[in-house]
Length: 316
Ligand code: DGY
Image (cartoon, rainbow, N blue to C red; front, side, top):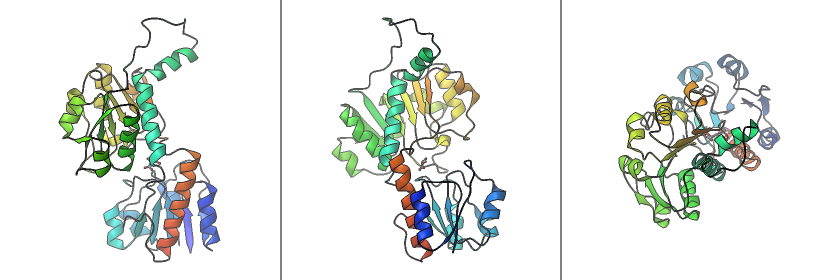
């Protein structure tokens, strides 16, 4: 069968696809492929290993009826119209679990950096503007013993909470149901307004859906403490970026740490002017280990789905 990998990924997965005897086409550019490139490449293909930047919608499926299986190289799959896939009997998988620790680490990197104004300090040092230690310099927020609010107690949210326990933090969370793993951490499930009001750190871990788009906007930011820090490693559109710019500018909250943006790779111009935001380039899962595992898992799923079997982490 013909399989298309829409962008170079760690070799291990590509080798697995080739070893299984398939014809494998890896698009060579290290950038998201265009719709035209995707359509051209997937001519006569049965399987596609997609990136989170590839939009797989009804129109694509209609134009490529031969495609039977899509393995997304990400845990998030808001780039794929699941209902359209289901309606056409196209199987879809994602890569959960293998990137949980890596993404939780980035949430914590952002949390620490934003709380302790590390980005701002580093910029000053690099600009050769630092004149030496000062008693009033760079006073940030302490982390140990504070309250962390987790929005979305799935795998990554739970891991971030577990790491918070290591810092002696009190954990509160918002989730559709009580989470056993959170109960083990003595975490309390609350409604969103209560979490926003009580948390010193708010970390977002929900998938992007119609219900979570702009879950955090002006009203929510105004509910947060003036000393609070907002962290987003999930999907950009969960936060209203324009509202966040205003909140950071007028010190409605203390700081934010972002790994994801509303219209990647575009970033709201207002964010660049602000010192109280730490911005990373969507690197949540970017460790050698996690990316290798993602490559392997995506390939494993794709091979299983093309054999007509259930993939390990198949969604539909
Ligand atoms: C994911 O997997 O959804 C991350 O955002 C990218 O690795």
